Image (tube, each protein chain N blue to C red):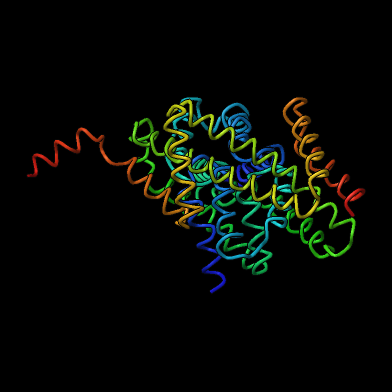
Length: 176
Length: 190
């Protein structure tokens, strides 16, 4: 049963999520945090933070870790398969058909129409992380970390891994 | 398909996986570098076609590309080989690092580290939200983008509609023929 839930929790986001791995993040959050309650916002933030600090695709890293947390190695395998296999099989199986539609305006419209929905869900995650920061680190620390992170990332184009390590150090020293 | 070809496939996609930060879409140039420039498994135009086809499908781009290219170069074994090379090392790293982290959550300074991570992830997610809204604005304009986002927000957060359902309905609507054409078909049917 848990395997079926894990499969669905990762299959659904990946089968509707147009726009690559990042687009899938809020859809997975809706399942993992919202629907099944396997993690709270803070734990999900850890997964995202570390996921952004490490290379390789974000969707499979999240699937592997969440699957493992929920149901061990078997869970990791189920969640990763649900992420990778369905669309890959579609691609290999329907290549000829897809080739004909690759420049179709309707296909372009599909990814265009999904974007605003993903954007609002990402904004929803920003809010939930903000309220998590309020109850956890508090307003002052949350503002300081967020401001420094934003300046480092956007102004100085710092590597995300560096910013995550900085936040870990700040948290370990000042929030412990 | 020789073992050495499979080896090349494995190390190419291992490199791509280890050098690609920032999620799948940012890894495409690395895939291009290995597949077109280094190993000449594909020509430029073909790579562009495969990328366009991968984008007609949902799901992560950084597993569809390796899977397809691996299949082309080395059959089913090549497909599995290439996908695992991209994703497996960092899945194991995530499980080891975060597993350690969450087992010691009750230690004060580790709990502090976890709390320090939240604002950073908030900023990164804000950046992604802005990216998606901006791309949406370029394609649909401000008014349509904001109205669509607002309606989706009401459906998902207020009315509790499953996001997969909201997006699924949009995808079906996007696949339908243009409105004017559909009307004339309906009229013809009557």
